[in-house]
Image (tube, rainbow, N blue to C red; front, side, top):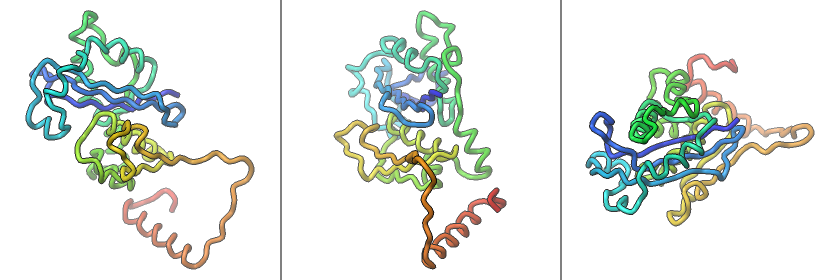
Length: 233
């Protein structure tokens, strides 16, 4: 199964005011494993970035002057996502902007759903945690993912974080720590991720002492505080 975890940054919030995409970040999952086949581009929007948007992502108009326009990278992007399932947090926003960009191409009838399916992790999170905050930062806190070193949003970094959130939320095992982030490294490779290792034969049995047993009981108490009727009860 091939999935593409995707995030975008934009000049503003409304396609009706012709706001444009300025960054796309994609992380590939194959059978729920993060691969090195990521896709990332900054894009020249040919318009000014709103002040509010700049305060979120820190991408300036000047930094995009030498970057390609969307139509120059569109086919490469379509080739990358075709046939996959897109995993997006608040998908209507990103898909709306991607369709807005596609509408400006020669094949103006193309939309994202012609190339791939879309899974919205915000909808999934709201079903899993009703009545709670379910933005990406809140989910990172809930799943104990350390993003303390992230001061600004970035499409590729946020896609990588969302990949870890999605895997944990859907039953995978992963750990992400931004303490090891080197600003001179590529965001995908600068983040460390720990996954379950497949073992042959029977699993080892560990006999815990009284201290370990108490720690386990404390953790079960913590879980009970997070959900009213856990399945394991």
